[in-house]
Length: 169
Image (tube, rainbow, N blue to C red; front, side):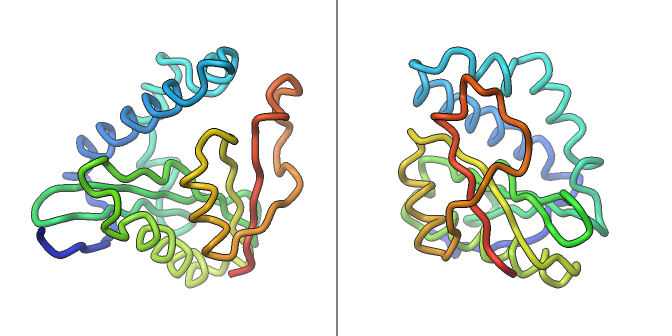
């Protein structure tokens, strides 16, 4: 297997990032059949497609960033962050393709995003997940993320399935 590399995304990576984001959404759909309103509320196809096209603006430098993991010439993972406020950033859409799982790409993406966010002046990173993403939750906890209160107003019907975490950078 080629060496894992983590780097800032470029405009040329956006097609691969879109592919990874759609695979992430498919994983969420697969893992949450008991939460049909979850996908409709947070991941409706039309709004998700528009959001994916807007990722370069949402995560634009100097307040955010998108990082990718590559194995050889193949983009196999992504992570991105953007500001919640002047000192807090949210990491979003951390996803590693099935062929790269077990390579350390997830941890490397998160670590890189944390270092970049810290360099950008953020003091705290937050994230949300859903209970069925047990592997992701275990990784976040191993990396030092701790449960925290919601940092936005979630749909009350979904609160039981959502998990919120933060870490000091």
